[in-house]
Image 1 (cartoon, rainbow, N blue to C red):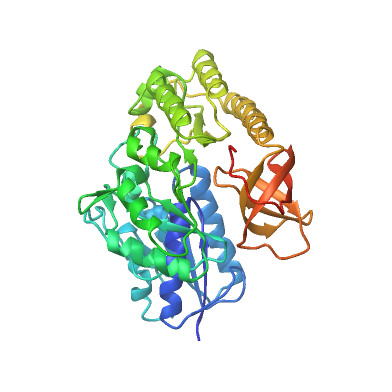
Image 2 (image 1 turned 90 degrees about the horizontal axis):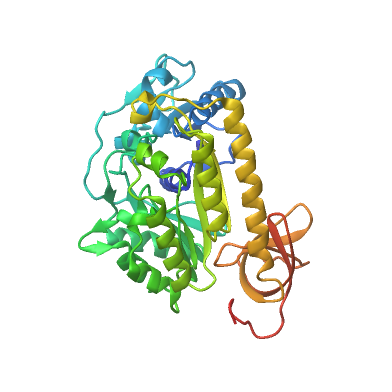
Length: 437
């Protein structure tokens, strides 16, 4: 059997696609091996969201070629779409597959003979048709990603994703349920519903809320989690479902990007700070014990000290349990590239560090709210300290001392303390009380 290894750089959606490609390769007779082990085929699923991500892709390709000079190297993903011209000039790549052909990549592997120049499967435009995907994602983790949507029409001025992934399109509902059932049959108890702009799901008259309702009927599925979702796309029915007796986790990751209206306008975001804050207040009011995360971008062109101060104040005031902090990265072809008033790197670094410290403090405060209460934890793995760790439905990472293997088990845990990034607890023997009881 030919050996194949796959590696992902980038987002949860990339991870979902790599898992599906792995399943397709296995069904075609490949033996999947851990990335870094000897392989006949290496598939790299790349990212282009920042300059650093593209540099990581190029460095990884060079590393793979040094470590495995005889392997057939196939490069796909967003960088294969937006940077195909750069990749063609690199040594050691045999196949470059753009977005349109990405999920069909295994079909093009008719031979693993090395090539003097890469074959390029690339189209400038990407189909807008709704889609199905072959296979069931191949995951080793407890949670599995479930791709339901692709592409974006929002055209934020800093974002290259509409160019790398194309216009919005959705996965056919019956195909979503087919893979979901397959993932549950493989033992996954939690599925993370993901897409580029997942809240814009629309197919065969169904919305994202309808898809969640369909997933709730899949036997054996205990939890459904929604990945990052735009604030303007979250419907009241979705919040009401999350608030009720449901498999849908009480968790939202809702990108803010900036807390300054002038910057939001320059970013071409579809809300202003008052609208965003009003939505967050509604969500927290409707969904008890909601876990709430966000993304904040630092250093967007024109971000003055006053604009950053507005962001910091809003981030501190809103009930986030954490936020991811990103530095602005100029992207070729985006509108923001033409904006003046770039922010010095030293300023970006200082602002990022300030927000990261605030995020750690908010996470610790959120965790402390639950000390003394009993929560439901889906356990995943044992950490370096010997604690078995897992997640609550509202995204608290919990660690407990346990000699037994708790992997993929849902257990009640009474929280006894909290530290940076981890709540501590002990397995509760008594009847589980839901969070909020």
